[in-house]
Length: 190
Image (cartoon, rainbow, N blue to C red; front, side):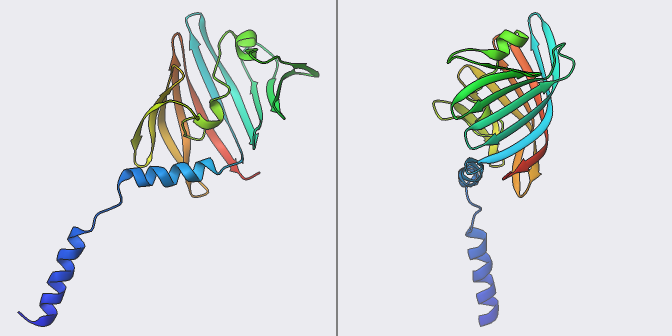
């Protein structure tokens, strides 16, 4: 065997010993990138089912650091409703009227008869578990599903947005509430 052939054989063997980084490192990188997002928005649709029936609406979400604007509009039988969290204060706006909310107030349950965990949504909508205890499963370096605060959240589909994989379809369920969020028209770093 020639010296060149021996070197090629050795390189091939060494190359075969190299392995791809474990999926956990993909998740760690993905999670770090998503956690750094401070300003983002999307539009989409939300469908919610309860024991009493179901609702669908258009959804617009805009987040800048800790300030959130979530607007629901459409066939829910109510005028456009915007939930605002600004400087730690939460308010509900319908038309020209803005109502301040007290801590622990559940504006979605009051207005629509169902509730979503507003403190967790900024995390879940990006494909991240919120701080605190959770169970989760990964696929391709992203969340496949998570269980947190009594909710089951499944990530049915992702989409590429500015080099990141962000959720496109989220399914959620807790007790008698279940639904689906379709996220599109993402804008990052507003």
